Length: 164
Image 1 (cartoon, rainbow, N blue to C red):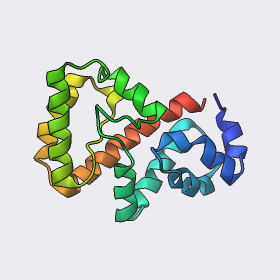
Image 2: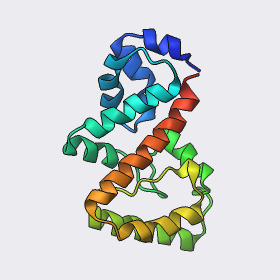
Image 3: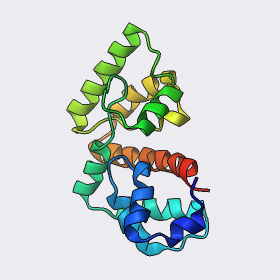
Image 4: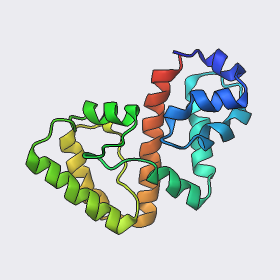
């Protein structure tokens, strides 16, 4: 685990590399946030990273959301996503549950043109299955904001795993 003081002292390339797992396939978030160093604590670092996300343009926000995998059945998960989905019980579903997730994923992507993002570590499969139909009622703008909010929750937990 990296100490925050050490992270603050890294050059831009190493800072970005060390925080790469925090935002799925989106190292630009860490790279843009590096200029705000030093960070006094992990909460300040997290807030700065999320400010960077929210200050991004629409295309960058959509690319960040689209960098996330569908829930269940994605063979190309990062190690972090695999562990997070496992923590929610998504690695031990019945055939019926797998079919439900597949149907919801397809309907969600058809409506919004990006994957459903939820912080799996803060939810279990039942809660996730209940969230799908509720969020399918939202507007695209509401779901962009919901997705970014969930991404910031995921980032906070991933930061805690990486930095002390």
